[in-house]
Image (cartoon, rainbow, N blue to C red; front, top):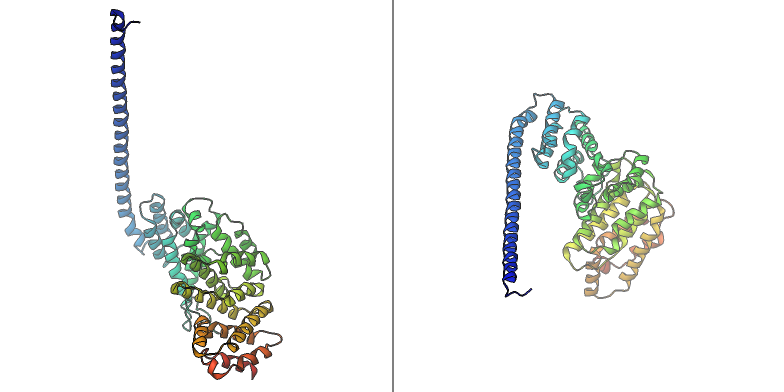
Length: 413
């Protein structure tokens, strides 16, 4: 059609009007949708504000009753459940109120119901409160701190009825982690960074209590619960090679690189070190092999902080071996070989500066001395020939490794 003709001009005009009308329609539609979305957002905000006000009002009415010890304990726990389920208070506030409830005779069921929903959303504040109970119980022993590298000796932690009950309540609450399938709790328990900060306390509160249940832990979905299951199994089943391999792979002593790697490994070895107290069973058997490998694995680490962490890991491994009821003969060959190689190195090193470097590398021989002490207490044929080699180091060289000669000589007397 000719656009210059009358009919063509009419058609062009019609098309133009239709196009402009369509644009106006689209504009109105977009405005309508935007206006509806805005109204919906404002409605949701008003609803959330109203909900927050209701939560605040609920909390202000209930919190004084929870803190009032004159009310019956389970009633206070039920009130806390209301606040927890409605999310009227934070996980941190719930954890602090739960700790207050532990000072009363709250029943296990009421306590668990009051904390479980918040615990599964954010474990950290609950681990802090549970950790206070754990460390308070441990402090019953005044001769040694659980955070240093010394032995408990012949003393055991004093466990009061209150501490035992409080720990029992936390264990019942944290038992929910064994069944966790998704959500923030699963994410945390699959994180080595999280476990590197919290595994020691978790091992106290995620408690199997038997070999069969510890074995069920090893099938859990979360890595953290599986690891705790294997850590407990080696206390119940000292020849369980599957658990021993799982723990050794988790530590991966030769592959530690980042600060998070070192913290995670340190937590695992710390649990093994205090296994007797945590799991009420004497650590023994073939777990001594990976522990001996940790104690005797030398690494050159330039970062002073990581070097200090690595020394702490090895010291705890030696302490765990020292506390074992039978420091497994399987570990004996590893320790003997390490000490023998060290003696060869000392005997072949001359010169003050070279000896100082060697002393610095081996931390003045402190961990070597720990290996010598362990060998001296092992059952079976003593390492007499090796002790004589250590004792035969000249005084000049031995001065760089304090008390090493004396340790060997004490076992030769």
